[in-house]
Image (cartoon, rainbow, N blue to C red; front, side, top):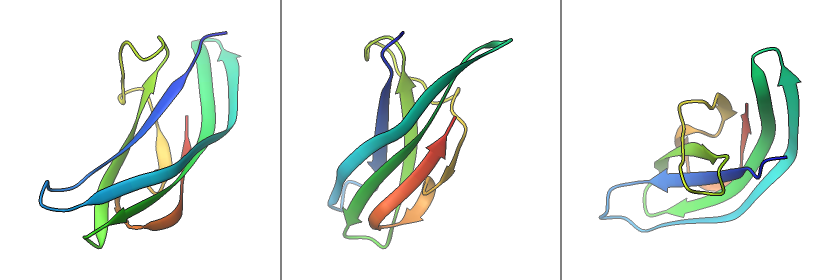
Amino acid sequence: MKNIFIATIALVSLNYAITVSNVVVDSLISTTETYGKVWRGIVTYDVVSDTDSVWTWIELSTDNGSTWRQDNIHAVGHIGTIPTGTARKVRWM
């Protein structure tokens, strides 16, 4: 089984402070489909900023962090432009 790493990243203008904390990857499962391995899971996190909203995305590494990709991830929930706050949740595949 490969190690899988998830990076939850939030980005705002450098003029603002931002804190991402309590990042948890949960319900991580993998299935083998005819076209290859499919990973699914839930990421929860808190994000605090001087602004009302931030831009977030998820990147995935299947080679112990040597490379990161976001183009193979489909996600719904608190991703993209989101309001800051606690208990942000993203379901991804």
